[in-house]
Length: 374
Image (cartoon, rainbow, N blue to C red; front, side, top):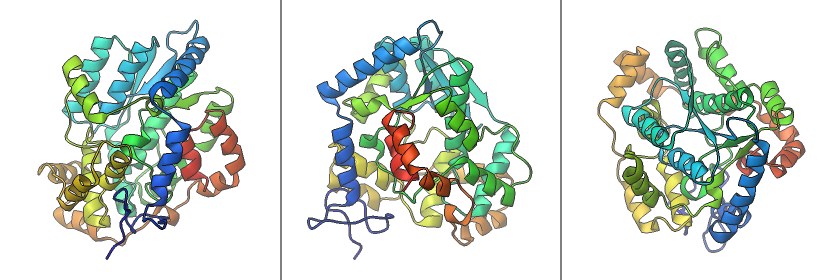
């Protein structure tokens, strides 16, 4: 029998997991620590108000005082609304990997239009993006979505530097999205370069990769801070969905991070079929810990096969130019991890004391320090 946490639904398949005498896993305890460090309610509201004062002061005389990454998703859409409600002047930033769903695109424009928020969009060359995705598929690693995550992070820094913005807002919430294990879904700029060099078809040209030297310059010289305001909010996801729909005509897209077709393919097909991993476990565990989902309901849901649009896999095959035989070969290739490629991880571990200071002065999120420097 596979051992499962008595509080959430993490099991023994999760990297670096351990259980106490009551059967509670270490990731539940990590979330409890984050709850103490990032309180919501009245304490969180006060911290956020004080932070807003600093942001307004830093942005005085400039057109924008913060940049917010938007995807058309629930968290980022609400974050734009909240920034305006707090009296901030946000610039919405979107990294278009050319795989957006129509719902996501409509959500972005509906929310931003009503809130009168400007949009900065970086569109990557679609052929280059497809070749990069194909390189990750050939690499046979779980992180086929790494280019999207890295691309958005880089574009946020690019926009912040262009408009002299000192604060970047990220819509992540550990209470609804969870704590990613240290060896799960790792990505950095060197990893992107390493996979592309081995399996890609040409040099990176339009893809906005996050090179270490550029990142450090943005951190130390531009002093751009990455903030996660939802950490300080009493944030119930189902309530927020209803609010966004009523206020903006925002539409739910059927699942966590399903704003993007390639993400849907990764989460609903590639990961379960190739790696026997259900990414919903991460989300459900977080919702259980924060009291937004019952454990028994999560257990029932995880026994069900997650719904998948029957057109997604044929769409991916057609767009990437795979025959059925080639696609089957990709799905059956031996499993690899980021450890099989060059990454910045050894450097991050050496620089752990440096990044501890960066976390303490809000230049990197604590989640980065916890995941990348151990």
